[in-house]
Length: 239
Image (cartoon, rainbow, N blue to C red):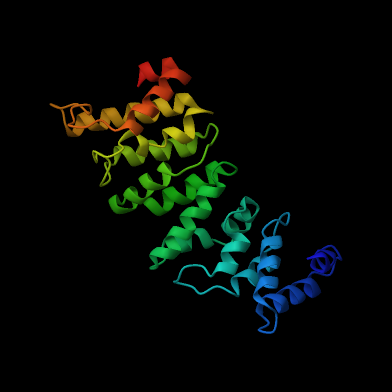
């Protein structure tokens, strides 16, 4: 890693990329060394398109990302700009491989806090109001980490709810699926807006019923409702 760092800083990108590719593709280099190099590569500042090309030379399109590729670009937000510029994320979302689509959604989830508007644009373009993709987006928002105010992601979240994707009104963990957890800490008003739109959509579908008329109440549902009430009583009452 120290040698590659020196090459990277030497001002000779061609030699650096050649050395990097040799380490990662040479069958004579032990796997644990390749593992260490890709872990280091995941942390570099402003990864270049050349570095991306080297990492993707290990890839197998239409399949789940090989572990070395995942280690290099999967979780670090510093790789998002170059992946976006090259159009890889949109292409992976449209891939015929379910595993590759999940990889793309995970990369976007990891980048959402740092690049919320760009992530929202990519997801909205892919969604295109398709109900099955809406179901996947609903799940994507469920597992979203803590984010700050993001009008673009909030608007997408609300539009997905209003599209009534399959699973929106499943009895299990209803409110736990509405990205309340990701928003309550830093943007409780947005959490209240998500809850409000969910209620409105519910009553459009079930005008003579209400969401609390169930045989069993889930503790997770009650937990997030109480958290919103404590964090922002105004947002809770508005919902």
